[in-house]
Amino acid sequence: MAKTFVFKLPDIGEGIAESEIAQLHVAVGDVIAEDQQLIDMLTDKAAVELSSPVAGRVVQIHGAPGDKIPVGGALVTLEVSDEAADDDAPVAAATHGAAVFNPVAAKAASADDSAPPHASEPRAREGLPVAASPATRKRARELGVDIAQVTASGPSGRVTREDVERHAAPPRATAVDDDAVESIKIIGLRRKIAEAMQRAKQRIPHFAYVEEVDVTELEALRQHLNETHKDRGKLTLLPLLIQALVRAVPAFPQVNATYDDEAGVVSRHRALHVGIATQTPNGLVVPVLRHAQRLDLWARAAEIRRLADAARSGKAKREELSGSTITVTSLGALGGIVTTPVINAPEVAIIGVNKLVERPVVRHGQIVVRTMMNLSSSFDHRMVDGYDAAQFIQRVKALLEHPATLFID
Image (cartoon, rainbow, N blue to C red; front, side):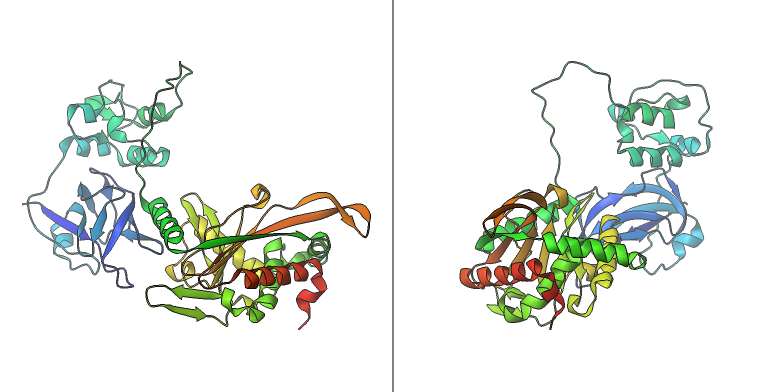
């Protein structure tokens, strides 16, 4: 009798009792190798990639993206050799039973994609399993195509790569249905972001404070440093803004804090762990620049780039996505004039950077063109009084407008 191997959700740490399916990398009928990536699971902190401890054929997937699976719950069932089924893999439990063998998919896995076309209806309409090679299934996942909806042209109703790409191709211009509605299930990181934003707005009494800053001299300094220290990497505005926070925060410890509102305890931090709000293909995440006060400008810039790259590629570690004490957020050139950033709970302050613009201002009775930037910040009014927040931002403003003071103890 054929053997099956049930890959179960392992204990992925931090006392996590369940995890959400973020992305599937295999489909029923796929033949996979040992250590091939199977599935991504989403915790409260990060996505975790899980790979198969054995080689085999996928015969059942126990969930879809958005489903929550408890630790120890079944994820994927594989048809395997007797030796693999009996192997006590460290991250899965093996069970025995009748295998569900799909002869159509087995034939498709070894068939030549150059076979003569033979059109058939999508398998989903017939209630039949989809016949397609692993390469074709991979291409479908890359294009975001539900292979069960693809009309097959291969022999015996097999879906070919050309079928998938034809299905994914944009349709020719037709009359627009202005009554059409697209319903999208909110899952994965987007759902985590939505839940976090909702909790923050429900539980934190935000108040905003906006101030304009003349960064003409700061920009001149930044450009000079980039010209004279090209070998050290490029500086953006962000490392200089963090330098201003390093100087300003010691006099305003109430803004570099986290608040546990259930325990009624506020923790004021001596170290400056700056959350860097980062837009990724899957939504906004906040990797953490730890001990910013210990780093020089170029070390900060390099670490910010590394963290942003890790976040955007989904490779950031869980410990790199938690533990911030104050967050900086910026939309760069899209920064607008004013924003109202949402506090990254349990923090009590977030500093928003708006775009730099050249505009006329009055200085000493004369109209001159200066480089201006607004800081749009939000504070938790339970822990930070308006007067203190205004003083703090005014201190940051003064440091940025007189950049020599950023480096004077």
